[in-house]
Amino acid sequence: MGKTNLQKKEAEALKPGWRRVKFGDVVRLSKARSQDPLADGFERYVGLEHLEPGDLRIRTWGNVADGVTFTSVFQPGQVLFGKRRAYQRKVAVADFAGVCSGDIYAIETKDVQDLLPELLPFICQTDAFFDHAVGTSAGSLSPRTNWTSLADFEFALPPITQQFSLIQILNSVEAVLVALSEVSLTAKSLEQSRLEDALDLVPSQRLFAVERLVKTGPRNGLSPRANSDEKGYPTLSLSAVRDGRIVTDGNIKYADITSSEAAAFKLNAEDVLVVRGNGNKLLTGKCGLVDVVPKDCFYPDLLIRLQFDADIIRPEFAALQWNCQSAHKRLISRAKSTNGIWKINGADIRQHLLKVPSVQIQDALLVEVRAIRTARGDVAVRRTAAQELKTHTLRFIEHGSTNGV
Image 1 (tube, rainbow, N blue to C red):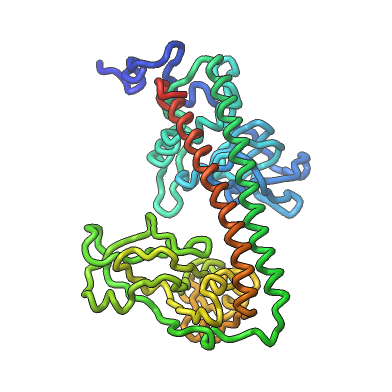
Image 2: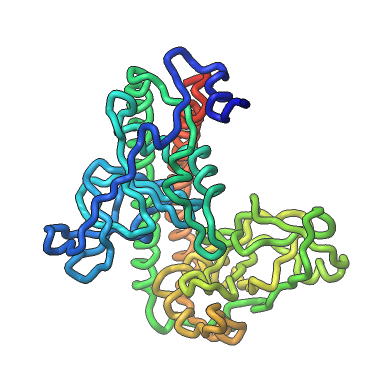
């Protein structure tokens, strides 16, 4: 009789004291239910929409008193795992009692002598766990994994002494990630509030239609059939529009077109590209400034190009203002929905209004915003380094072998 996968993996070299186990051997699924959560004293409920990918904290929730049909009960310390669309990587640790969606599993350690509760959420964040959950999910529109499949997940379990060490490392890294995330949000909020405050000081007579501020455009791009062979000319995917910039890294595809076609839609420095349509209304009409131009790259029909007259309004200032809540709200008030897609057109953009202070005021404000963005960039670098350390440690849990931790 052949060996099982578990037996084969047990034969692999592990660090002393480590053993390979099945998830269901050391973790249990809570089956606690409440048919009347309000009467049973539960005040809060958690749905999938309240769990953020990669964030172990529950930051938002709903009020049971507002009405809820959820009956699954969770307790503080239990781990909540989103079983629907597991690729979204929704895992959190409850710090209050409540009820949750049927698409969320509440799980806990069976025996603290085998698995410390504090290590469980990190096991659920490993790539191997998510790969298993996604690989065992069924359903086309809303794939779900089930407990029987999750219980079969195999991983290397360290001895208790090393579990303590891993928990210390991971909790420290997690605390750094939380702190850096809060700093990043604060810096972004500072940037937005500084822009809005500056725009509030611009008198209404300095409000102009976009058609008076551009040298060319608005003009839709070109969208020929893309290929996977990297043949032809590079073009952008919609995800290139990010945080007011055109980010080309990882957002380039290729299309086989003529040189004259590519030249007509070739990107230039300080082009402003506007999202023409999106299923999310709040993303429709957002823009990005081109500051790094990939060689021979052209822009697609998903985007609309504007080339501002820099003697009147700096393109960078125009892009920053464009994405401000007040200006963007004015633009998307013109958006129309077709088959679930919100769209704006060239006429909407031409009539869109922007505030235009003197170029001296624009330049001074841009100096401030660039300083804030530099700080945000520094925070992002530190977050990346902390996340790499966390990923490195999680791999150590996955394999139970020496990898430098």
